[in-house]
Amino acid sequence: MASNRKKILITGACGLIGRELCDQLSPYNDVTAVDNNQRFSDYMPKNCSYVRSNLIEYLDQSSNKFDIIYHMAATNGTTYFYSQANDVLRNNVTLDLSMFRFAESNPACKLIYASSSEVVAGTTVFPTPEITDINVSNIHNPRWSYMLPKVIAENYLFNSNIDFLVIRFFNVYSEHSGTGHFVKDIIDKIQKENFELVGADETRSFCYVRDAVDAVIKISNCSKQVVNVGSDEELTILEAANIIAQSLGKTHIKWITIPGLLGSAKKRKPDITKLKKLLPTFSPSAFREIINSVKD
Image (tube, rainbow, N blue to C red; front, top):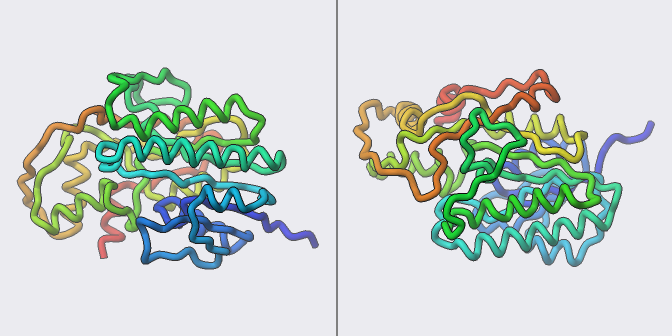
């Protein structure tokens, strides 16, 4: 009987989404996991062929014999968008272009590309569908150092011969979220009794990483399109922060609210109609449910 195991490459394999991909895919496939592991040095992917390497160096030294590539690698984290804007832009554009050349070297290879809700940060359409105008206010804002490479990448893929699927992730989180991600930052603030809350009235639609990755894997056969992957549960930052606080036993925090950062989306809610048509069983977990279940 022929084996159904596929040869899979996962980049950014130690990151929030990458490690979940490794966990779900490695029992049934031959997975190569690549990450420079600068941010999660205490983690190593299990049941994979793990390569700790600069991604560009790995691609330059390797041949593309993969059936599927899940390209999750990027410099991420809101703090970096503002503090290291040029590094973020330069690194992400360079990584993506190197990956696209690598993917093009094997026409039989499928590329799953991790885009971001930051692409549609300036939208006024809610819930936000995949096809919508991209609005950029003040092109000199350092925050766009992350968004612009994603826009470039989506444009490149749609004008290439690569067999691709773009996943536009909306606020994916997990118990492994690192510094620069909302859940981890709020937990750290509460533990340090720093009760400043930035952008309390802004809204987000948080999607648990296991739900997001399960969906991505199940729709990986789709091609040449963008699919929103996220939750349709919309919470204000204040509501989400209070849920996290309550899970830590802090029930009466008086937050000191601070206006949102320059360019930060005032509202974010994906239209996941396409995802539910492709995957009728998709039912994202409620934020409170997950936060309470992983608090320990």
